Amino acid sequence: MSAMPWHDEHWQRLQARRERGAMPHALLLTGPAALGKRAFMLRLVRGLLCPQARDGDACGECRSCLLFAAGTHPDYVSLSYGLRKDGVQRSEIVVDQVRELSARLSMASQFGGWQIASIDPADAMNAAAANALLKTLEEPSAQTMLLLVADAPWRLPQTIRSRCQRIEFQLPPREEALAWLQAQGVKDAVAALDAANGNPGLARQWSEEGALARRQEVRKDLAALAGGRGETMEVVRRWLDNEPEQRLWFAAQAAADEARAKAGAVAGPCASGLDSEDLDNWYMAANRTRESLRGPLRGDLLLLELLARWR
Image (cartoon, rainbow, N blue to C red; front, side, top):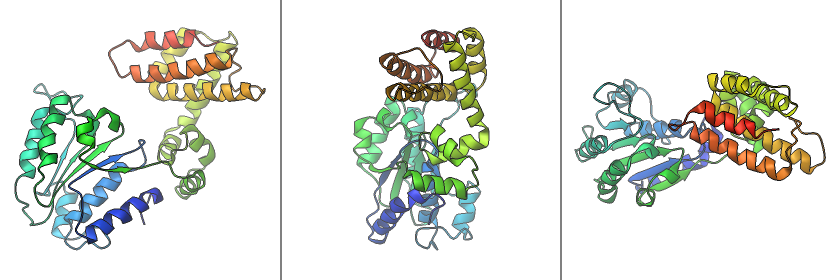
């Protein structure tokens, strides 16, 4: 059984295909961040490369496993953000990287087994890189596997997605998520799971990082602004200095909770004077602002515009 129980069904299906000799040549692993897609992918790779695997899991002791652990297995290559000529990390995966990977996959396996490559995050490929990958997907060599990991698969071209078998990790039922969090030693499991919108992996991560206190700070800031007690620019500076995207996630949550409270005719967590329609619009604006922070626009101006609409 996996350390993350929501992996088990996917794992068993893949192992059944392996037993039948019907493994796909390309897999696309998708789903919300922090649900263990990458851990699942590495477990699969280790098991495929290990000649002594049991139920799909590597033995951890053979030469293949030791080489993989050392990062020097000749039949596995991983592709991610590369470096530019000036040594700065790229923000996308480029065509030359994909061409090199495709050339590697066309070679025979040195251990006489699987030849495996992973692209993570696959949704970071630019258009030229994605086009270059198509030929490899359309004409796979025998005993080759390509593993694509993507938090945002919609950014991949349909031509790529349609040529991969998709494994989609979904949020587990709340009871299962809480049980897992408690087994991981997360003391504030309920609050952490609520903060993470039901994502147990994210809940554990945020609990360890102190994000729950940050969530309360965001609600206090919004309540102060709504009551005319807060200084907007001071809030903007604090949010930008410390996990601004996460704070905007929590701000959108607060707006949604405020709207639910108004619908139930009870006091909301932030005492906002916005009506239900305005809260809905502000919720969507907060999420758009979170996405925009990753772009070239000035973060202080984006936040100032958003918070100026809160009252």
